[in-house]
Image 1: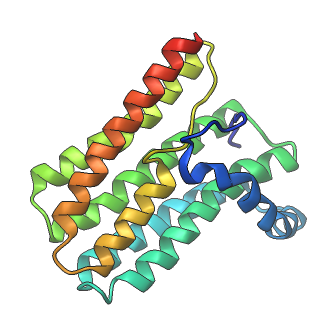
Image 2: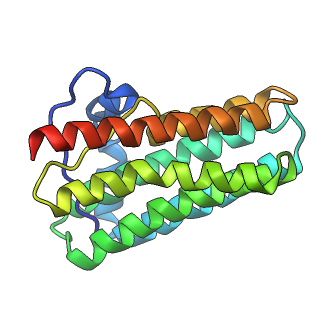
Length: 201
């Protein structure tokens, strides 16, 4: 299944710098999943399902009542995103097909979550935020394809985007503002990664 590469995180890596600590916390879960023969692909799908659940809660529940289910489901989405690749490596099931499926699952989860904002913000703003949210990943993938390192982290990476969605679910009337911050932060993150890659390649 998925293969993900990472390197020591420099300053400015954002919450992604906590990934090794978080992965260690999930080691028992990984071991249990490995014993039961769970497919890493199933975890990728589960992450997308959790993202869809978070989007539904965001769209259907008013703030602040949407915050608890959105937070729980996005935490699960991040856990599955961590577990699928780690489980594949632990069980020797890393494949190129799995890596592709993992990347598509991550992009789908990002976009599905932001679709929940359609109930509270104009379509054009949701579309701009959705496009911007994918830019950091495309930059990282392009850098890896060019022979550079696969960059992750902030200032507004996947984890920070999830936190911003929870903020929007918690505070009435903040949906449009959060989308604007998410779009600007994602664009900045893409730019930061571009600069780092240009220096390293």
